Image (cartoon, rainbow, N blue to C red; front, top):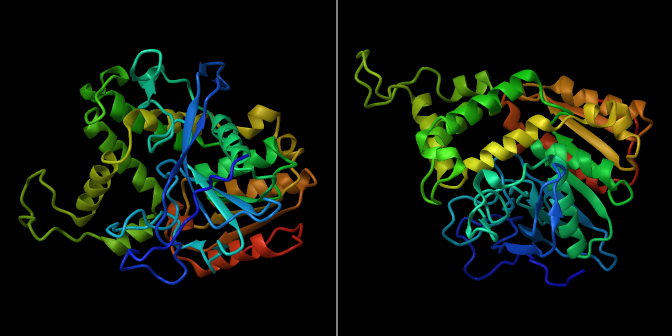
Length: 398
């Protein structure tokens, strides 16, 4: 247990665009676990670091913590601003802050970059103390369970006695569900959005195309590349392809349609960039390679592929048998990566297992990433779920 907590603070140098309800300027901290850690694969490392941020303060009994679990391309910075010059706040800033759906006046909010990541947590780009070089693909294979175990160690380090709630979308939803399964006495509420108990063959196929784009790039060099180099072309293509799965056809058509770049030369027969959507995807790819490690992308997508609750426990119902948490699963109508029926199946399996569970389905045309975007309906769901005393055990839709 520690009192060395990274609490979000506002300062006189707060960003000019700071809005009411924002947590202000925040600073990440590092949790160092200086003891061997054995992965589900049986492979071991001598220790690890998790980079994390917290917002709000723990109460006297340290049971008001809400853990935020990020998706594949996310990180620990889910709210607030790192500097007055930041162009964007944390990725879930619209949801977390004083008076917001996850109210930092009431809750002690924790978010960590996952084990295997590349934003300060130990992963393939970290230095292997045995060689003095980056691990590369010598890093142990990571599973969702490994991510959850390491985050539980962080929470123990912070002195958290019980999780009031754990919230996540997509891969974060997988982590949230596993918290309830692996630590049932510790986890009181689970809110899993746009997620699944196991990926479909199509989702695995998209991940494999992304991995092949990286591994077929000559600069990948079997995972051995310099920190500022590596398979930048392959990683950008992987990101471009994956981003298409995060949005919907309707949202892409509304935003871009068949609009052409002003510089496009009419109907010239050329492979130069002509359409606005091409420019958008290239921007997504280029911005991604400046913040993400290619090997981490390989490891984390493989962890997603291997996540299979029914296979691991015998059935979804058996997987959820230990759960004591109240659970809310949220699906989005336009999500074709982890569609509503996969989310609904989780809630129904929880109910069949005799657990307290609810399901909500939000009608959007924004695709898989709907859980990240502005939505008053979603805010109402999250606030109500975290703050009400008693949940109901029926299936409902919005």
